Image (cartoon, rainbow, N blue to C red):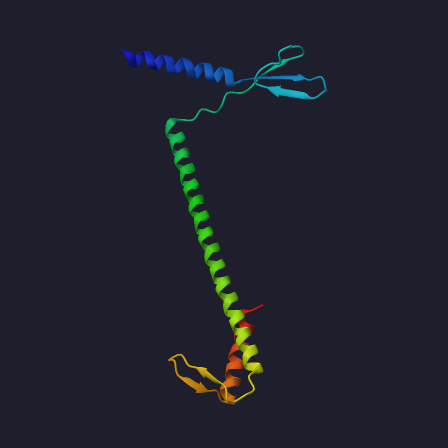
Length: 153
């Protein structure tokens, strides 16, 4: 018995809501500005009621389909935004690494440019200390200069 009563109340509410939302009023205020509103002004002089057309009728299936499409668009937008944020973070990390490597290459190039003594030694990757030959110095200078030319501003 409660179901028919609830259905009647729901339909009455929808009908009243549709009626209220379909009304608009227009008037000219004291400054000469034309005003549109859903409620008339308190003095109610020079007010014209504007009848708005009813909203388009949409079937529940079509409304559900539109809602699903909007949800999918929102999900796609969020996913695209997350991908873009990850890409920006990755690019920032790569840029920071490249800047550190450029600074190191410039420092190495300056060191090897000022490295005139053949008595200087350097430590290899395996931890041994060896003397640098002029050819080794020139090779390392060329490597650092090539890295700077290709990767640094």
